Length: 252
Image (cartoon, rainbow, N blue to C red; front, side):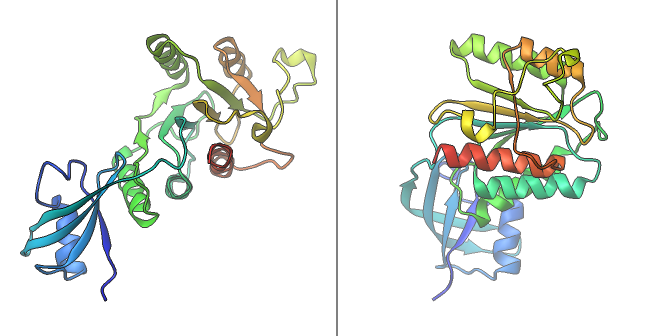
């Protein structure tokens, strides 16, 4: 019995053909033929059991046999915003593992002390899709272009005004908030202890050099709360993955 293969088709119920890249993988790599069964995922919460109706060198057509809406593993919107690492391998590793764990949105931040100020989201998008297929996730995370830190805070403020509701907003930083000279609020605690289940949540993670003091103050003025991820000092991609894991577990 052949293993059922998963393919990403954003509008699977309104077309009858795999996207070119998926088709080539199905036909050339997996050697799929007419009559083979496959599972399609639209990235928006639905799987489709389908049968291959035609397979050529460049095309793979299908017929949907069954529509399978999936239940969400978490209900609120989980958003992670991070400054990408100088070494892109680490950022790509994070994107893959975070998708396997589960979250809804990823934004890359351009901060004062960012070591990387440009990022190619096309490659990250492919990694998100691959991880979604591998982990059989029904929802693909939304990937945003790199955004300036101040502009991002304004965007979040506008989102809240438009929706009429606020979200839980946290900023992870390593400053000693016991020092009054810093001029920043004390950490509200560990992220795992303050995230509320069932509510939309956004967590920001800074670059290797951390957010600047001014960035922390600005975030606080916009309603963000400073949190800790624990006693260990973590690399950016590790901290971001810990944050995603915490959000996911709390909301399972």
